[in-house]
Length: 471
Image 1: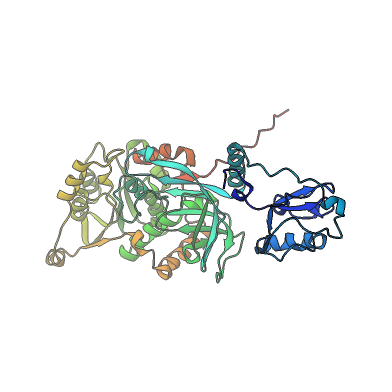
Image 2: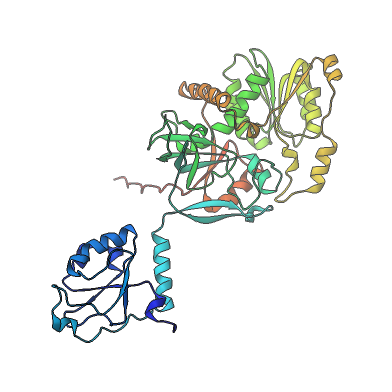
């Protein structure tokens, strides 16, 4: 068979002009070649109509004009005997020119047009472990197709967490290996429902919690990992709600058993968990709050309710706490690890509790620092049960990422938090909002500890309405 022969291309169906070509859908019309009454196909051309549903529709439309045409899926050689729709003169006319192969450029254009017509969405993808440049924007194709028990969400905002910074450097064990889309929380609108989903409907505004994969314009997640947004909450607030407030609530109340007239030490008090913890402490009567942060953030901390801001960069926070409260504090929130865990434990009063929930001391730059890892490991706090018995203190560890299957437990906490939000007692503090294209700047804002509150990512920044000139 020579290259470019008719057999090397999809078979074409030749019909006379009187066939109802315009009445057929465009995809079917593309497979027709019309010959005038004065001509007919080449005598050696074999005609075939496939048995696909689309071809069956085409076959039904043209067969009345061609009684000699076999059933779908059949093939027969030409020439055909004259049909009622074709005179003898028409049947004896010279053949029409053979179909020429389409140039490669035209085929490429058709492929590009088909790809452009396919639904697509953008995603932030971690392509490898390392610096900020490892997180890139990529296009993903295909419509959302939630499986049973799942739903598709059009994402409007995503939360940036300290764990995302650790994940970029390969220091967060709950993230699948790259390439992978990071992101543990987002907020958006339900776009499609999988079979069996109840309690949700298309158009609902939801908050989403997951191990990873939420830094995309469209995500498909299990329905039981979504929570309805309360009235009045913005998408940016919703994207900064779940992880920070669930963490702070469970540490303070489930582990810490915080009660009136007690004292709390909150490290990184200006961060996402820190600001959430401050607000939750204010829901308990007469709680004294010590908060560590750089001096530039102290005014903001005082306004939010911190009793004693401490600049950890210029003074020893242990000494500062002892000056004000010689016996120490009742609860310590420790996201730092290493030697700071030991310091926090020594600051506890009798019956005090230390809850460790992070290792921020590992993060010293854009890339993994082996020296910082070794130092943190060497100085890591260690104590045995007998020592705890004698000291009347408690140590607990908290990692929300390992409770992704505890739907009932987490759902109960979220319900309490939504109630507090609706009462006006808590409200996410948004530090800044960054488009997907500026995720490196957003990460730098958090890693260099410049933020006061939550850092948020959005697929696109909202367009500002032009201000009207005043007369």
